[in-house]
Image (tube, rainbow, N blue to C red):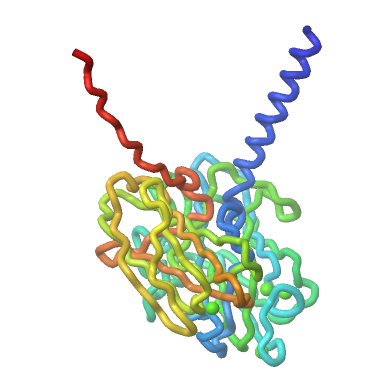
Length: 334
Ligand SMILES: [Ca+2]
Ligand SMILES: [Ca+2]
Ligand SMILES: [Ca+2]
Ligand SMILES: [Ca+2]
C-alpha cells in the first residue's frame, strides 16, 4: 500500500514537472511552438514582391520581464542565405543584416515609427547593441549565431508589460534570394535555456507555410481594451486555401484572401467577450494541388489605424471556441 502511494507520487510529480517544462519552453522561439510556422522569411531587396515579401525587412520585439536579472542572448537559426532552408533565385547573392536595438526609442507604444509599418518610418530607433551581416556562409548554414550577451536593463522599459523591450531587425540589403530563419531567446549562447515570462511580438509577420496539406499555421494577435473592430491585411497568399479567425466567441470566420502579389483587406468586428484575450488566425492550405514554398505577409490594425501585436506565445493561451449554451427555462410545476 505504502509502495503504491510512493509510485503514485513519483508519477504525479514527473507529470507536473513535464507540464512546467513544456510551459517554460514555449514562447522562447520565434515563430512560437503554437504557431506551427516553419520559418520567418526576408528576401534581398532586389527580389520580386511576388515571391512573398513586400518590404525586404522584418522586425521582432522581445519582452524581458523586469524581475529577470541575468544576461541573455538572441540566437538566430540559419542566419545565412544559402545551403539548407533558404529560397534560391539564380545564384546565391543575398546578404541579410541583423541588428539588435535597445534603449529609448525601441518601445513601439511610445514610438510608433519603431513598428516599421509605414514606408519612410525610422524603424532603426534606439541604441544599436549588436549587428552582423550574413551572405552565403556554409559555416552558419542550418546552425545558430548568438547575439549578446545583453543585460535586461539595456532594453526600453515598458510599464504596461512591466518588461524591457528589445528589437531585432533582419534586412535583405542585397541580392534577390529568400532568407529563411528563426529566433530563439536564451540564457545561454550554447544551449536553449528559456527566460520565464519572456515573449516576442511583431506587427507585420512575413512567414513560410509548411509544404504539406495538413499543417495549419496560426498567428495570435492580442485584443486589448477599446477595440471595436480590427482590419486585417494579407499579401501574396496565392489563393492557397482559407484564412479563418477563431476565438472563444468565433467558431471560424473566413476572411478574404489574397492571390499572387496582391493585397486583400477586410474588417473583423470584435465582441466584448473577446477583449483581453488572443484571436487565432488559422491558415489552412488548399487541398488538391500543393502550393509549394508559400510565403505570406499578414498585418493587422485596430480601428484608429493603430497596429495590433502578434505574440509568439498567445496571451491567455490558445483561444478555444466555446459554443453558447442554450439555457432552457424549466416550467415550474404547479
Ligand atoms: Ca541556409
Ligand atoms: Ca540570387
Ligand atoms: Ca537562412
Ligand atoms: Ca506567397
